[in-house]
Image (cartoon, rainbow, N blue to C red; front, side, top):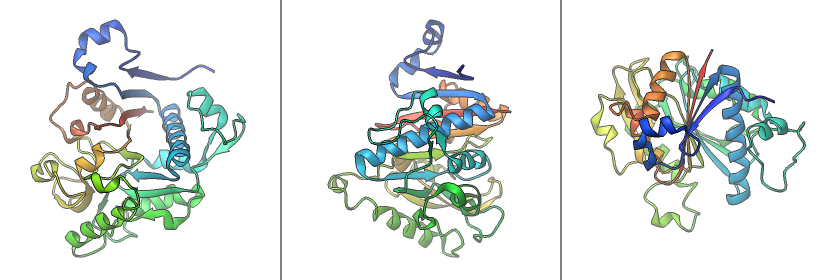
Length: 291
């Protein structure tokens, strides 16, 4: 089967690519995949499923942070559907021992998956702009994951500062049982999914909010996004939490966002919030889909 996505990595780049972008040598776990919408979406879904089974095999559960907005809708539907063993084999994403290697077997996310939210608009749950509503419509119904395994942000609360504190406390309950957690200032999510705005924002971290971008202690913030779409109050994870993840996966759709994503990947664009996403010990994946 012929691959229909293009891969740029630090280990397989061409000589010319190395010459032009020697600055990239600082990173050893940074990847860019781009292609048509169908191929890129299935590849991203396969990678997430493979990482989920790896996490369960190694740590007994898979903790994934979900992105909001419109771009991940097609990815969530693909994840809910599951990916075949053939697709995992195609993208060289083996499952751990103990799981079926049958090429026809359909693999959904494992039962021991827990979902978290990367950001939320401060609107009622049934509002069209609610990220939680989008997640419940696209991912949860057919994923096989218990709906109680979604750790939600209470975006509907009038006191958004309290909502941020409550969400940080909720995250802590998933990590206090880890023996090493007492020595760690931030949680290590297995995978954080991020989107990319036209202006280069990610989660609800915007360029005009310097205070939020420079936060070094808190895990969750209540922020005002006057230039967001829609404008208004939001809840968001902070950059230190994002950068402590084991895997970070950007998923974008559309030509303009794909071009911006590649500039960020190549470090030609360093002024936007998404360019500050640099995992400390994890891997960074960029998936850019075009129609």
